[in-house]
Length: 310
Ligand SMILES: [Zn+2]
Image (tube, rainbow, N blue to C red; front, side):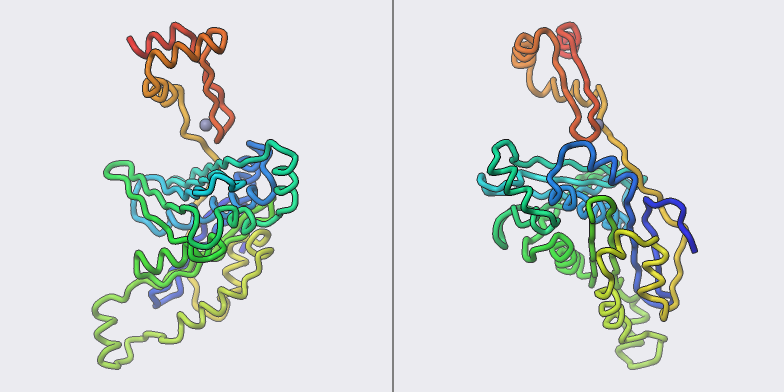
């Protein structure tokens, strides 16, 4: 089996079991996002893991909308201010981070770090820093989940969150080598009432009681370099070739930005006319807004600003 597209989410099922999983692979889209700013290596890798995680998690939801993962430092001395990555139901992904890197000391500190976990550790010691999962449905209320900072890797924190909040046993493994990113999510969905009853009555309903234990052990054997370099189908085959795996058509993932001139105008409206005109005066008659996600620059003239507030 080959997968010509390198940026995708491949769903898989273990036949006749409540187990469902996804493998995400990001290459082109990740390279585009990582090149938007001169990111320190550790942040670049953390963004790769966050993008992979957002692409995996939205696959577990039955909503039309966007899922974003956000981490924020609560410590003013932290070298990482914040980072966020999002994926929508159509597979459009983007990410951005803010860090301190102006002084030679800060630059040297970043140069000494190379792993995603080192960037993640900039949130401070265990329990420090904030991790959010934001779900913004196309129609309806936004939802924000707070992820406990209980491990030193993003993957372990997210798996813990899934287990706690949704009561769904979840395995998550994320990896990024700075060039490519990849990850796997495996979940054991709740049994149907009929299956539970059969299990209680100790009847053989075809339920494989050892399956989850076995999958946990198998999933732990996947290496970071396999997640970042192998095809999704190859990863699934290497891990679960003893199981009865069914894999439907994969979903495509690609970089895209949702910024627009209209959204910038709305942001200017938020600032207020007086302040906006002040900025115009300071910037020689034009108000420039640039999008950190994609590099697009939106320029507003004094006339444009007056029109916004007309
Ligand atoms: Zn943009």
